[in-house]
Amino acid sequence: MRKSAWLDVWVIAVSQIVSGSGAYLALTTLILTLQDTGATGLAVAGVTVAASLPVVALAPITGRLADRFDSRMLMVVAGVVQIVGCLLLSFAGNTVARIACVLLIYAGTALGLPVRAALLPVMVTEEDLPRAGAINQSATVIGSMFGPPIAGFAYHAVGSAPGTLRWAAVGFLATVVGGLVVRTRRGKRMGDDHPAAARAPRPPIDRMLKVVFIGLAAVVGAISAVDVVAVFFVRETLESSAQTYGLIMATWPIGMIAGAWGQAKLAEKAPDARLSGWLFGSLAITAAGVVLLAAVGSAPWMVPIWLAGGLLNGAANVLVTTLVARRSPVANRGHVAAIMQAAVQASLLAGYLVAGLALTAHLTPRTIILACGIIAVVTVAIISPWVRAAARSSELVTTPVLADRVPQPQE
Image (cartoon, rainbow, N blue to C red):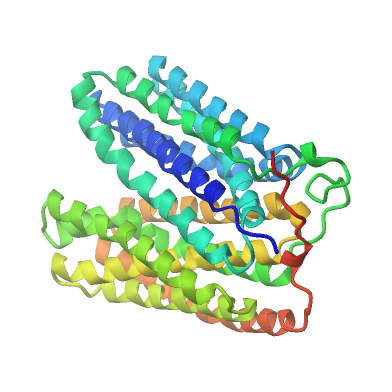
C-alpha cells in the first residue's frame, strides 16, 4: 500500500514559507520606497496589479507547462526567474522599470503555483490530501505574515531599498532548492507514456469544478473589495489608530491557519458532494459576516468578525484544494490548478478596482462594505442551487478521478 511522502510535503512547505517571505519582502520594500519618494497612488496601484496580473494572464501557459514538463526543472526555472526579477528590481530607477520587474518576479510565482498544486496530490494518499492541503495553506499564510514586518525592519536596518531587495532575492533560492530536493516528480521526464506527460486532447473541466470556480470567483470578487476599504473604515469611520488596524488585520491569517487545520480533519473521508456543500456554506457565512461588519460601531467588534472570516477562508481553501485534486485528471492537474488560481486572482483584481472606484465616487466605507456583503449573499443564493445540482450529478460517478493516480516516481 502506497504511503504519503510527508518529507516532500514539508520540504515544499518550508520552501513556500521562505520564498513567500521573499516575495512579500520585495513587494513591501518597493511600496515603502515609492511612498518615501513621493510616488502617486497610481504607481502603488500599478505595483499591486503587477503582483497579481501574471497569475491571471499566464494561466493557460503555466498550466500547460506544469502538465507537460518535468516538475523539478519548472520549479528551478520559477525560482531563477524570481531571483533575476528581484535583482533587477534592486537596480531599477523609475516606476515603469520597477513595475516590469515586479511582473517578472510574479511570472515566476505564476509558474510555480500550478506545479506545486499538481505535485501535492501525487505526494500523498487521498485520505491524507486535506492534511497536506492544510500544511500547504499554513505555509502560504506564514510566508505572507513574515514578509511585510521583515521588510519594515530591514528597510531601515539595511539603509537602502537595493540592499533589502537583494536579501529578498536570497529568499527565492528556496524555490530552487525545494525543486532540487523534493523526490516526488511529475511531467515529461517520467516518459511519454506517463499520464502527466501525454499529449492527448485535454478533457473538459469537471462540471462540479466549473461550478465551484465560478461561484468562488464571484463571491471572492464581492468580498475582496472590503480589503481595500478596511483601512478607511477602521481609521476614519471607527476613528481608530494605525496600531489597532494592524492588530485587527493580523487576526485574519491567524484564523486562516486554524480554519485550514480544523477543516482538514473533517474533509479526510467526506464525499465530494459534501465538500462542495461545506465550501458554499462557508462562503455564505462569510458573506453574512461582511453584512454584519457594516453594522459595527467600534473597532473591537471587528476582531471576532475578522477572525471568523479568516477561519472560514482557511477552511474554504482546503476544501477547494481537495476538490481540485480529487476531480482533476492526473494529466491535467496543472492546467486545472492554474485556471482556478487565475479565476480567483482575476476576481480579486476586479474587487479592488470596484472598491477604488467606489471610494473615488465618495461613497462611505460603511456603505461600500454593506453593498459588498449584500452582493456576496445574493451571489451565494444564486449559485447554491447550481452547486446542489452538480453535487447530485457527481454522486452518480462511481470511479473517483484520484484513482487515476500512478505510483510516484522517486529519485
